[in-house]
Amino acid sequence: MTDRPGPRRELERIRQSGGPGAAHSRTALGTGPLPGRLRAAILALAFARGEGGSTCPSDAARALADEWRPLMPRARELARELARAGEVRLTQGDRSLDPDGEWAGPIRIRLSGDADG
Image 1: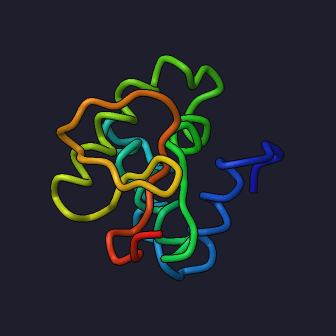
Image 2: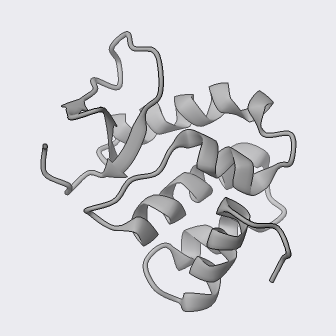
């Protein structure tokens, strides 16, 4: 396991646990194309945190790169794509977001089965 704290270490724990999100975590920590790894990191974190939890696109970006800020636009777009596909739900505060809508500011990514509010 890495000495790095935070989301990277969380992905490593998810991978080792074999539980929810483990397969996605293996992909995220692999050597494939970055967009696929970023997508997998979003899903691994969402599955591992469960229906009562959430993740932020920055968690996935920080898990994959020390210089994570340039990954944020792609992470947010991947979150939109996952929401369009029904795999996750995007929220801001207590409000669900339309993945095709206009919004700005921090968002959270939740499993799609997570009830509103």
